[in-house]
Length: 116
Image (tube, rainbow, N blue to C red; front, top):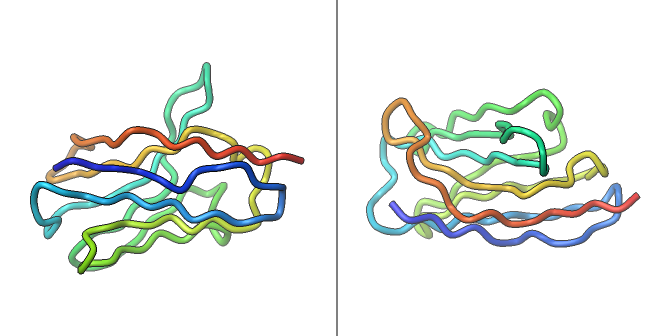
C-alpha cells in the first residue's frame, strides 16, 4: 500500500491543523493506520492509531484530548485533527500502515511547525 501524507504547515500555539494520509494500492480492511512524528535527533514516536475495520483508536499520552484520528472509507484516507497545538508538537509527521503486527508501510513526512 502506498501512502501520501499532506496538510502540514506553520501554525501558532493554540491553533489547529488537519493532516491527511491517502492510501492507494489496496483496501485497508484489517489494517491499522497510524501517525508518528519525529524531531531531528530524536527517535520517531507514536502519536495515534486507528483500526480501519472497527474504528478503535489509540493515542499517545501527550496528545490525548487534543488530537483526533479518523478515517474515511470512501476516500481510503486517514486524518489527524490536531487542536490546541503546542510548540512541542513541532515535528515531521508520518503516516503508516500495519497490515499484520508491524508498521510496514510508511508515507513521506509532512512538517508541522508550531510557533510560540
